[in-house]
Length: 337
Image: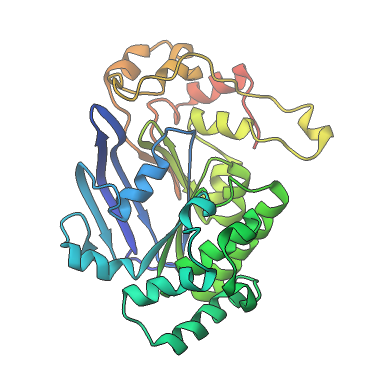
């Protein structure tokens, strides 16, 4: 990973509302140049909405999105079009993101046509180059999307995202619709391409095992907010927020001897309504620390900010750094990641 002081992507106090529902709620996050940042959380936590707001597909209600020093929310349509050449998305379902009426060659060449890059001969050569890059034979260019397996179709979608030579790739659940064996192939391909092309990547998923393999840092979202942000090894080795601990405890371990002795953190209580988020901490209705520590009024009345706890780790919890919180977790059967 290339680490520079200036982030390529800087999300500041981003809020996206659909009517009364705040899908993303005052969220801030940065992506370093050359880094892969994993964004994880349950369905409905706001991950995909965040990705679409970054590219201005869904316009934010408030906040700022800075890409390589340029603010996108206030940018004109003409400027946005130019900037989108440098930031592309890989969608979850390649079959719905690839036009079934177009051949693979036409699909991949279309971005070049839109941006006026090259002539027909040069575009055809670029398409062949991209197909080889993602592990496909250029001869498949004359075929249609429905003729490919899910993994092959996702390779085509990745080639389409890369053909404009972007600096930023947003991968929105790119393997969740694929078989497990194919998921590994696509993840390994993305890892290789990130290094080969020096890409910065925002990788969105709900599978923490997948995120661990590809990410340098991981941000955990809950109800539209980031509740923990840490380096990969720190987050998986010493998760701080109780929500992160619960997510990790749900990930199975491939060794049966280890799995049978694992302690699990089971969340109880109800998920709050996105249209009527409670005051204070939105996680408190499911939090094992909320009642155990004897000061529930703090959680009910004060929104916990995302604060540093250790080098390269921050969490949004009033009690997560308390010795009493650690004791309470151990008493309830904390999880070793």
